[in-house]
Image (cartoon, rainbow, N blue to C red):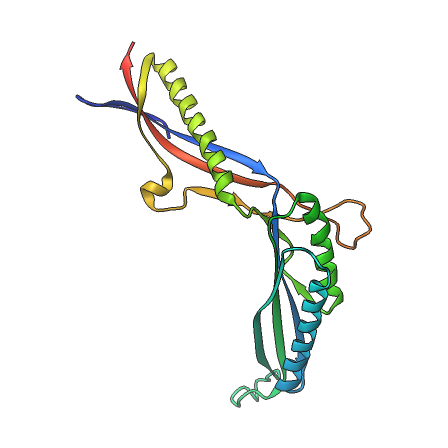
Length: 231
């Protein structure tokens, strides 16, 4: 929102500015899981544990520098027999157990070419080792604040352009800045946004999952006030 404010001792133009920068990601993350069922709690838990070890071993065997692999969640729940209307008053009978184990995979500070190749290898290795669920590959910036500062500079320039357009149309003269702030400073919300990118399937590589990382968009906004005088 752009506006002009005038009082006995204050004449300002208030404008907003926004800026966006697009950068290639330098990091990726994904979660891969194995879900198994067994007749007993021990059987389900042991099978999930064995497959988790196989997944972790396969991922570590890729020997990707700085790859972080860790088991982040394990859950076991009973499987109940389906109830009929006649049996609904009785407690459900447990007929087995379901165990789920999730492994987190993170790679930070890599080039776009490395991410393109290793993202495919990571998914292939995990699924081949027994994973049967995946969150997909998510690409991100390991140092988003640097991108935010670049977007912030662009938003300042946009605010100046907006103020200049108002001054020209209203036939007034801008005489300097009065104040500038980000939305986060005024209402407590985050002052910038980072659009994380998902991998795009494409290419003609020999891998089963050719993934093309897309650029990350970082957007910043400001609200600025300029003093003005009549020409």
